[in-house]
Length: 101
Image (tube, rainbow, N blue to C red):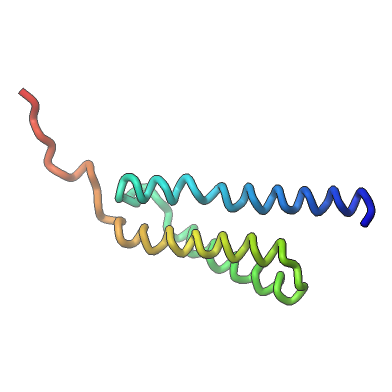
């Protein structure tokens, strides 16, 4: 493997890891707040479709980097969708607030 090919592989792995990490803050926010009020769940539905297509491509090309990254992203996006629809109408702002005297 040439040094250029190695650099390309390293950049690909870094991009894969960063793509996966980019989904984590939204997932954590939904879990912690138990609310998905401001989350555009349609975007995550599209992400699942895109990741599934990339997964298919990775399988056909036998590219483990694409397979692992996109299967992980699809899984996280599905979890966000499930939690998002579960908590979509769960608004902490709508709950009665205690009045402190």
